[in-house]
Length: 200
Image: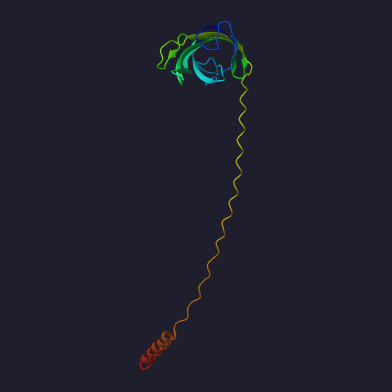
């Protein structure tokens, strides 16, 4: 982004008309535009990076509010967050080109406005204000999303093993009667024969 400082009141290192170069990047969570909300990542002087959410006011116009802090010296001591700087950024889309997911902003203009810087130190006094305007164009279009890789084919399930063929159980041999039982049978048979012999 190429910028020009339009107002600088008691801001160290700034003067009206000074040209500056800044890097801005935009991202959004919606699948296709126009998105209702866009995140701006900008690099300020000194290489400090900050995020700012921009909301769509109307098609092609976005605005967001945020703040940052600056160090101030008071009574010989440096306060790292001695000054609070609230600001507003308004972005106008002035050109578009076809992108991977539809139209994509290719050229923009923007305004940065800080109406008043707030002194947070014990020392009295104002610490000024500043403003700038910017213009820029798309330099790094987003890369298209890679196509999803096909899911691997499932491995074939192994064929079930054949069930084993049942084998007939062997027929048990009749157990021989004990010797005592055999002797008892013989005596009973002999007694029966002896009982019927006299009557024949």
